[in-house]
Structure formats: C-alpha cells, structure tokens
Amino acid sequence: MRHLSIALGLLVVAPAVAQHHDHAAPAPAQQPAPSAADPHAGHDMTGHESMDMRAAFGPYPMNREASGTSWQPDVSPMMGVYRMTGDWSLMGQVQLNLVADRQSGPRGDDMIFPSGMVMGMATGALSVRDTVQFRAMLAPDPLMGRRGYPLLLAAGETADGVNTLVDRQHPHDLFMELSASYSRKIGERGSAFVYFGLPGEPAFGPPAFMHRLSIMDSPEAPISHHWLDSTHIVYGVLTVGGSWGPVKLEASRFKGREPDQHRWDIETPKFDSTAVRLSVNPSPQLALQVSYARQKSPEQLELEDDQDKWSASAIWTRPVGKAGLVSATLAWGRKQTIHGDGDRDRAQDAFVLEGAWRPDARWTVFARGEVIESDELLAPPGSAHGPVFTVGKASVGAVRDFAIAPSVKLGFGGLVARSLTPDALDPAYGGDRTSGMVFARLKVG
Image (cartoon, rainbow, N blue to C red; front, side, top):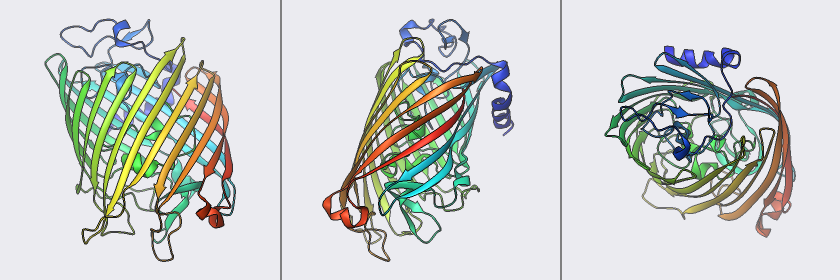
C-alpha cells in the first residue's frame, strides 16, 4: 500500500516535475533495440527520450497494456505523467468530467453529474527478470447518487437493492481498482504472471470502455456494457497467465456478484466464477481477443441465476502525425442466463463499432454504434426480465482540449445520440429518440 500512496501522490506533484507523454508511441521497429539482458529496458516513449519503464506482465512494450491485464495495440499512446525513482517508475493520470445530460421521451430525464477517474501506478524492477506493479484507480461516480445518470436503453445492476436500473447507467464504485501483480520473464520473449485485485478486472472482454482509445473521450457509457466489460470492477479477482511474443493466455477466478448499491465501500472478496481469455497482437496496430466467463449469480436481485458470457473484439490503432491517432474497436458479446433449475434463457447478443480520430493534441472526434438484444427494457411488475427486444443506438461527438499547464488540459465537448427502438416499444419510449450531453473535462497526463 505504500507504493500505491506514492503513485497517487504523484498526481499532485507530477505536473511540476515530469514531462507530458500523451502522444502515439512509435512502432516497436522504430524503438531503440532493448538489451539482450533485459528487453524491458530502453523503451522509447517520445521518440527522443528513453526511460527504463517496464511492462507489468511481459517483455513487450508497456504501451500494449490496458485496463486490468487486457491488451491494446502496441502503438497506443501512453497517457499520464511519469517519473523514474531508482528502480521504480511512477505514473499518474486524472480525467474528470462534469456532464449535463438530457435524455428525451417518456423514459428520459435531465441531470448534471460528475464522472471520470484518478489513477496511480508504481512499477518496480526486482531483478532483470522479475517485475511487480501496484495500481490504484478511484472514481467520483458515487457523487452522482445511487440511481446513476439517465441513459436510454441501458439496464443492469440495482439502484437501491430492490429495483433494477432501466434507462439509467449505474454509478461505478469509488474504488475501481486496487491491485498488485508479479511477473517473471521466461527466455527472451516469454513471461508468467499473477494479478490480484480488490477490486480488479478479470480476464474477460476487451479493455473497459473508459480505457479504450476508440471511445474513452465520450462521457457516455455504452448500452452494451453488461455484455462486454461490466466485470471491470470485481471485488476479488486472481488471474494467472503467460505470454509468448504476441500471444497471451490467462485465466481468472473472481467474484461473480456485481457491486451492490453501496458505492463507497470495499466489499468482501469471493472466488466463485471463472474467466479465460486468449489475446493476440499480430501487428503493432492490432489487438485481438476472445474470452469466456461463467459468472456466479451476477445480479443481486436474482441470486439463483448464473450467466455464461462470451466476447470477441478487434482493436486497431494508427498514429497520425506527431500527436494524433485513429483508433477503432469492433466487438461482440453474448450473455445467457442459467436458472437454478438448469434451464437456460435465450442467449442475447450485443455488437459494437466505435472509433475516434484525433488529428492533433487539441481535437478528438468520436462515434459509436451499438445493437443489443435485451429482455430488461419491458419487464412485467415483479420481474427483472420480459420479452427480448433488439434495439440500437448511434452517437457522435467531439471534444476540444486547451493546454493550461504542462501535462494539464481543460476540454469542452458534446455528443448527440439517437436511440433506435422497434414499434412494439413505442408506447414506452415514444419512438426513436434523440438525446445529448455537453461536458467539461479536466485531464492530467
């Protein structure tokens, strides 16, 4: 915990003592060749400044690592403020939003709320082959209230321990991640690692949506969240895995129950669910994964029901100029409820295509399209499930950042979203609806 405190403290002092590194890293072929003794060393973060910064889970560019133990393309930018202290590298990052949300129609609502994250990380070299990392991530989401914020077609979790949230996005807990990991280099290209989080993220799905370059600038959660990445906050996760070159195989035991309505605490860990993920980065621009999870009683209001989940995704990123990028994610998720008597509900699928274009350090344009099959939108009284409807959503937005200090930016942005529903949902939603958000953002790193 001492190292976590150091990493979080860096968020206060780092802008004054560190350089800003928010731009695309060169492909590995352009980086200085690492030494044979330690392929972690000498990773060129900026094209002109070499720092001895290690990846946490293997001998590859640290740019490859995203949320939890997930991978993203090697050319992804490293965002944060960094400092080397002896054998330790420290990183801090802040992204805080103040959002004005307007969701239209009979099920819509208006709200102003905070969102975002504060993150600190400390990575230490125990030897040329052994690496440890401590990571902490906090969210201001509990300040928005238990019911979260209005978001048409979103569903999942509970607001009060009694009712399921529908057409609202639940707030994330204050503690989004408190984790520790250890990795051991095997040969010149391989590694074995172990990761523990309370909370943490098991080996399922692509990087969580707030960490995906293709959509991280949008303050709006995807309606596909509970298909792809709702397990990114798990109160008890233990992952073991190994990598060899561009391939990683890992498995997790984790607590299947989603966080309850008490957003400020740390819940009791449990290891009753399983996830397995295969990740492949066939080129510096591309990251692929396929994963499966058996989640034990994920919903607090349906204790006898388990879920089978599948996901597959492809993330493509390409640097543009000195500080720009283009990034896109194509993802599929499937979830199927298994009742206590062994009966299975119909499997429900979700498809997501999202992308971001950053021409320079000032502007980012982002867009997302989703189609989901959901049985939670029109559930009868006393039940959390009803008929399955296929619904969709498309959104587009932009944010303009202004540099106000080294490593510190203030941004202003907005988005417009269109919810697409079948005729059978017209009495509830009033047809297809147009909604929107405007936001201000403070970004450090």
